[in-house]
Length: 205
Image (cartoon, rainbow, N blue to C red; front, side, top):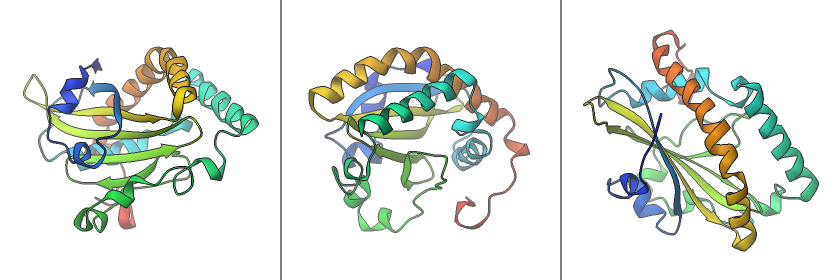
């Protein structure tokens, strides 16, 4: 895993840049996918769905998420009135017709971020609560060594001063615990991609 400059995202002609210019780039990370080619993004996503997910994370990560959801329940951060369709509109409402009608992406109950759209080189998920409206952008781009690599960009729209304080408070946990664990999980998923079972129905891409 390598942390990249924020300009690495803004200099690439991603679709998300046109759809969400009002979101701030919070983090940009690259994940090692040795031997990857330009058409391997769907294979990477399938492997991540098989080997990824919060329940499969390390105990420190699952503990942090459990604490966060408990606090959210106690303080009312995650209620229906704070999410997409209530406090904020979903990014799906901004999609052009061709992208809106395309495959949106795979969802599951264990994934709190919900699919917005998915193409052959990009996938976007979103989550909104009382603190922030956040997007997780996964992109497939050529790396410095010539192979293609997975890049994750976190884009945010904090909910006022409280949202900015919240993002600042959780930054050390993201950078020191969550992202390193995510890196090990996703890079391992790529190495074991050929062991991934074929997904059924609309998730088979």
